[in-house]
Image (cartoon, rainbow, N blue to C red; front, side, top):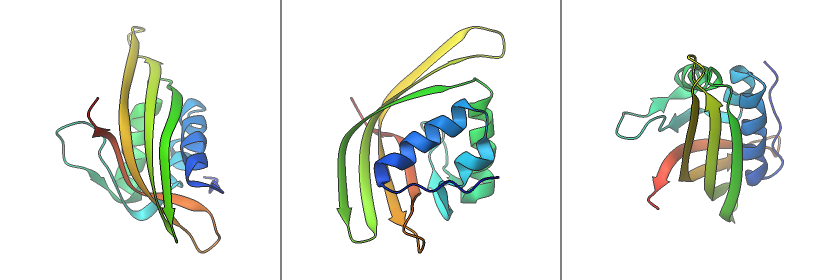
Length: 129
């Protein structure tokens, strides 16, 4: 695993998309805080902690995702940031059929001691369209 270094809150999303597209769920998980929560699917309990999040990201990697981000707003106060992002993921199911998902996420990020940013709360389904 390579611990990815995101210099801005928005770059976390870009690095996440690249790691997923390249099939690197461990690297993607390094962009989350150890105590992070991730709302993997609507209406389900969130994944908590890096191990659960890494497992969910490995499931996502299985569809060979291409992630597109359109950051709508970022607010930074000290070492905390919120990011609202209109995202889309295109991929391929194991049976070869295409899959597309999209929503507007609400994410809370925290600046780390090394001045990088990491996800604390990841809610990909956070904003209704």
